[in-house]
Image (cartoon, rainbow, N blue to C red):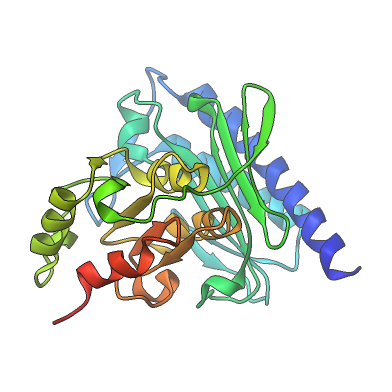
Length: 271
């Protein structure tokens, strides 16, 4: 099987996985008997998170038995040059409170563990409660499905921070308090035209859509960002860690339309 056909087949399968996840997560969204526990890192996890990851792992084990899997709830399994990276519900805090800003994130990395953005061959971000799904594979562009219609994505052309709309998740995230990040972050928010805490995956997807010009998070896990990277990049944008390294290494991220990226990195550059 040649490379293009393999990627196309993998993307079709990733979209199939997203369909299965959407059915389960929507069935449990708002359920009165939803069980919510607290993980050791003090973040919430619901029975829907675990059930969704279980479902996807079972499918991958059956349909892609040679592939490895890395997921938020059950860690890494398998040893392969191909690894599916899964966040069953990105935005669990929203999910358990009935807020529709949550999504299943699915990525395929060509190395295990993934160490650079080039390793991520495809990404799918599916937000069924918002009625939106984004996806991309390398060399095939980034796409959005909404209202039954598909649209190719492209980032904005805003070139000045003073004109930019910036997204993030939580202003009071303690990871902003490392070193002088808080001062730099607050300074950026005062510089740009508009800033909003859209939350989790959504800010980055709006960067890919061109409706937001940049988004940033001070602390992320591999499953939080893997699916986001190819979508933003295939839409013409750029994704790095705050210090310019790969986000998969830096474990934080700034995504942008590319035109603003060097200025954004300059905001957080060490003095």
